[in-house]
Each structure stands twice: as C-alpha cells, then as structure tokens.
Image (cartoon, rainbow, N blue to C red; front, top):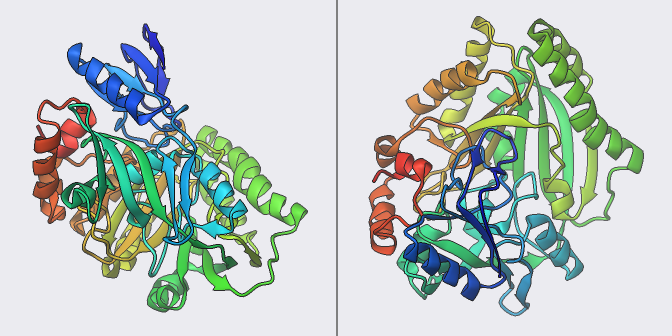
Length: 437
C-alpha cells in the first residue's frame, strides 16, 4: 500500500473546498483499508475517504488521514442469475456503466454525470429523475463497510439489516465503504425526447408530464418564460443515437463550449444575462434519439459551477418553483444557469432525500466565480418553508436540528453512528454540523 506523509492539498471539483491531510493512503484492498483505519486510530487521527470531489460540501475534507480511492477499483463479480454486480468502492460510475454495457447489463436509473466513484455517488444520495425508479443508492443490494474499530461488516437486507438501512446513504459517517453490490437488469434502450416548452405550460401540466413518462425532467431559464423538457422512456428500438455533428453541437458546443462563453460574459457583465438568456433559450430545438441508458441519462459537464439542490414533497414543487421565478424577477439577481427540476419515488433509506415521501427536486446553479450567496440564501428560504431536504453533497446552510425535523428517521441514523463510531473516527466539521456531536 502506498502511503504518503507530509501535507499535499486536496481540492474538490468546484474548487471551493480544500483540505490538508497529515497523510494520504491509497489502499488496494478492503484489508489494507481496514489496516489504515486501525493505524489512524493508534495515532489519534481522524479518517476520511474521498471520491472524485464532486460534492460542493466539505463532506470528505479532513486534516487527518485521507483515503484515496484510486486503487480500490474494479468489478468483483457479476451474478447473472441474481442480476447483481459487485464493484470496489472507488470504481468510477463511467467504468461501471461501460463494463455493464459490454456484458449486456445496465443500472435501472442514474444521475446525469458519471465521473463520481460508486461509493461517493451513493453515500451522498446522487440521483437522476424517475417516476418509478429511484436514486443510485436505492439500487444497492449489499455493501461492505470498514467500521471505526477496523472490522469489515457485510450489510444487506439479511446481514446487519439495521446498518444496511442507513449505510446506503451514510455520508461517510458510519464507516468507509469498500464494495457495493448493485441490482442490474438486461440492457435496454431509452428514447429521449427533448422539447422546448413555456414555463406556464410545464408548470400547469407537470402532473401529467410526470405521470406519463418514466423519466421526466425540465430546465427553466431564469429571466425568461422558457423551459427545456426531457422525457426518457423505454423503447423497443431500433437504436438511433444523435448524429455525430448534431450530437456534438448540442452536447459539447451548446452545453459546454458556448455555455462557457455565455457564463464568462455574464460574470464579467451581469447586465447582459437576461437578454442572452432570452436568445439562448429560444435557440433550443426539439430532438429525439434512442440509445442505451447511460448514453441517454448522462452528459459531460465541463463548465464549473456551484450548486444547491433541495428535495421537496412532490406536490409542493410547482408552487416552490413559481416562488423562485417571482424571486428572480423582483430582485437584482442575474442568473445565467438554468434551474433544474427532477423527481424520485419514495424510498426506505434513513437519510435519503426521498426517504418516506414522493419527491421532486429543484436545483439552482451559479457559474464558478460569481457571487452565489444572495441567490442561494433566498432560494433556500423558499425551500425550507416547504420542509425541503438539501442534497448532502451540495451547498446548504442547514444543521442537525433542522434535519431532525425533516427526516423522521434521523434519530435512528445518529444512534447507529453512536454505536459504530463512538469516538467519531470518521467525523469532520461538516458531519458535526449536519449530524450534531
């Protein structure tokens, strides 16, 4: 196992969180990871595992021992009879997706980026959008966890079910995940239909659009009455991926290249944002394509941003979004990034943003380097009035007292943490804030 002493600086993707650990380790197995945890305990140091740093919060920051995921990767087993795949915790989602596709398999649902490690994505509650299919963590069938005393726990509905109920979205507070077993299914095709729609139409027809599609989401462009909608539904085929040129124009030039220029202009001259937003949101055209799931669900995100996302009871989302629109219209705020709305069914994970309730998400973004606090604070006030639950990996200001109110099973999670990590070996400032001492 490679171990490095001396502090090199760790940074997250957005660049807003830095950490200077005392030492870094890159374990190549669960046994090596358990050994690193025991050694940290002997030295009286805290331990945090990092993924790819796609969280905007300091969930993974530590001044103790930083565990890097780079060597803890790969597929352990594919069980075609049970339809499961077991992967090492540091495996990037994009690698998992590619391997599964080669084997004729797929996850049922996923988020819109696939840079994250499987453990990082699931531990923070990463999700896509779905009427019936839930977050990545809700597709976990079993997981392996190194706890504070260095022991290796296997968790599933049958083994350590109380730990399994919480550790699928464990925030890194219960231990370090070393392997995950996901439910998979035979690969299928999705037909994606992207279509511009007015804000008034999307919000008034939201109930039908949600009910009629397996995966519905939409983006509203602030300072305009324009939205872009995306409906993904299973298809019998044939596959009809976007043409190379048109795909590049939509996914690379519009979504990354041109968007980067527009955001930079908006950062330099905020007054230009509303008129540019009107032009660019009107430039959208409808398109339809059919492909395997990960090629439809995910897209590259090269424009760096800050993000806040709140999960609301699904019936509250349209009213809350209208409040956000009214807020932007009556304020001096200038917002160049679209506001994203997605959904998830209720699930049974203690700290899932969709725990025990039918859910819709509102995500707000600001281009990196632009002041985001005023916008996020005002939006957060709207979200908390609707008992919103913030995404664990995105910007928010909530604390343990608030979470105890909006998560019925919050005390179940903290009691489990007291049992598994009484000395807070896996603690840090972020966990102290959101879970309490």
